[in-house]
Structure formats: structure tokens, C-alpha cells
Image 1 (cartoon, rainbow, N blue to C red):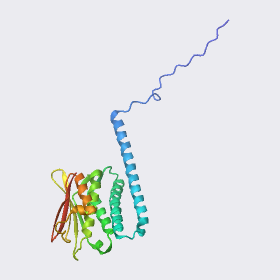
Image 2 (cartoon, helix red, strand yellow; image 1 turned 60 degrees about the vertical axis):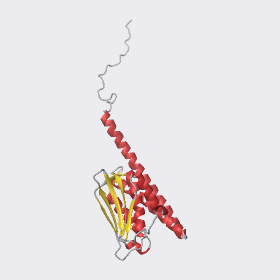
Image 3 (spheres, one colour; image 1 turned 60 degrees about the horizontal axis):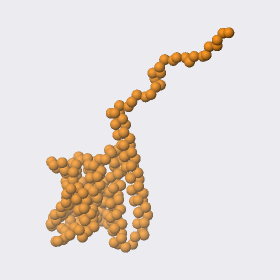
Image 4 (cartoon, rainbow, N blue to C red; image 1 turned 30 degrees about the vertical axis):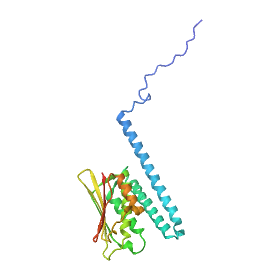
Length: 232
């Protein structure tokens, strides 16, 4: 009786294209991870920008209900501080630069916002901004922006002559730091003036400490100059 033959599996040549993928090179894996982190950072910055804009919009809805002058002043200070941070995150998002911002561009936008938010005729006082080409990190830009907002606001609330001016300058120093200077030709600070007596200047002094310096002030009949150095 003839024996039946069982079918035998066909032997195929090795699959050279559909096998396990080759291991990713360490350098490629590192580059891919960096790109992922950069994308996540941009998304966080975008969300921070939108969140700050939402807070500003909500606060503005309440502006018309504030009648008390002291409460109104506190509201305006709070709005300005939030807007200083919102400008920073907006510029970071627009440039896609990650964690660094063009300091001169940031200072110009910030000073313009401070002027626009100043009531009455004080907004006519020109604010001149000059800056060396400096890129500064996010964690230095945040306290710097708040310091500038406080100092320029303080300048604008001085009693000015008809030819009043404010100058904001940022200059690179040879020691790995730069210096911010805000000066005006308004009235001199009164004798014995205590910066801790004003919330804005007290905040500026605390922020200067975060930058590794102290806020310097010099005032006489020709005007007032304030400055602080910071790492770059």
C-alpha cells in the first residue's frame, strides 16, 4: 500500500526587510528626545501665555466696579505685573526661541505697555529705550521685567517739567553680567526716602536680590537714577 506523503512546509529565504528594526543609535535617540522636550516646552509656554491673557481679560471685566482710589491703584499695579509676564511668554512663543528672549525687544514692549496704562497726561512723557544685543534666560527676564515695570511706573508718577523724559538702558559688562539703568529728570526723591515704604520699590529690591545684586538709587535736583546688574 503506497504511503501518503505529508505536506512539507516550504523553506523560504530569510526576510531581510521585515524583521526586527535596527536599534536606534544613541545620538539619534538623544536628538529625538531633545526635539520632544522642546515641543513640550513650546506647548507649556503657549498655555502659560493663554492663561495669563485669560486672567487679564477677567480682571478687566471688574475694572469698572472699582471706585476706591487705593483699590484702583492696587488693581492697576497687579494688572501691570501680570501683563509684564504675559508679554514675556508671548514673545517666547512668537520667536520659538525656547527659554531665551531678546531683552531689548522685551523692554521696548514692556515700556510701551506701562505708558499706555498710565492715566492722564503722564503718558505723554517719552520713554527712550536702548539696549546692547543681549539674549537673556526666562528666569532672569521675569524678575527684570517686573523691576522695569515698577521703576518706570514710579518715574511716570513723578511731577515732571514740560521737557520731561525717562531713559531705560541695558548695557553688557565685562564680567559676564549686564546692567539695567532707569533714569528720569523728574523731581528728586524726598530726603530720607525709604524704598521699603512703597510696595513697588520693595518688590523691585526683592527681585534684585534674586538676580544676585541690590537695587541702587541715586537722586538729586537733576533727577533720579536706579539700576541693577544681572547675569547673562
